[in-house]
Image (cartoon, rainbow, N blue to C red; front, side, top):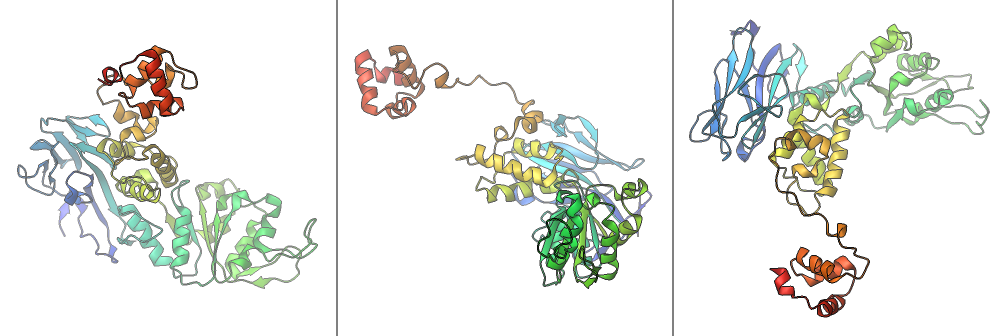
Length: 455
């Protein structure tokens, strides 16, 4: 094995195999006019790489992009610090890192690089000695980033076991999708029952989970089996487990340890066979220290933990997911480079859920469009890229600001409307909500020359 910069360099694992103690940097081509290069991941070693136009430079970053200079930029490693630098080679259109023009910049994990109409993401990859990768995309866990390959690999390793799993991640990152994947790959024939612990009334949590007998409390006119029984033979997904009341936690611990539950008001316990998957965006270790969560329950749940990466740590997947969501909403899936750059630069505080909602809004704004443009994005997301664009001529204000469509127009107003619509009488009639014959009568009354107004 070769030593590079004081680090052990090992070979990446093959699909379905484990990778061991492996660290490197790479750049991924996320968007480019060169369709053959999109998705290409280039591992960086000792040698510098030149980014430029195909036919003028050699290597994996020789791209068919007309907006690139022949020799546009170079990626160079500084051995003393193991830092990769991006250097502009006096390019025609400039080199941008995270939206800002740069002559030379040291690169950090998930930095966004713009050269011509091509967008790349710089990524630092570090895999532990027993990391498992699952490269093949499978519903519902989509994405080609190393972070998502690792998440799918963890799911594959533990899905067939009956042990509880704790899924950690920020709001909207896809914790419930991981729970669904665990259930679907478990081979269990029962249902997946999802429970939002934070949405249950505190005084009814125990009854909802474990059931009750008739008359156990006021309002319990009929017996209820509870959600654990509903999930018997399948999986119960306890979302927001950090919201579980302390008084109920010992009963949940018993269910995990022995498979026994006792309905509220019952004298006898009953066995259930429900696999438990729990999720939270809280730091349960800190909750244990604060004595707001039981340490023994945390230890039982955290026997196997899967960390779902936030979207900002897997920028390689942003455009792939956006196109999937756009297609679902019957919107164009072609996205102009400026819009792609804006999407990559956004921090996505609400993760994949936020991206999905954004794509639903884009589908409305881009109705009848062939391509998603920067103008179809919300101003807050488009702003960093819009600020780089030169100011154009002001557009013509809406006609309704100067002409009242509900009133009979004056000669000047009708002339203005005809000029606005290029002399198209049908469009003028639609604007005023009148029949075309009425427009012709007004034209005749005022003695207007439609051909002159059209010109």
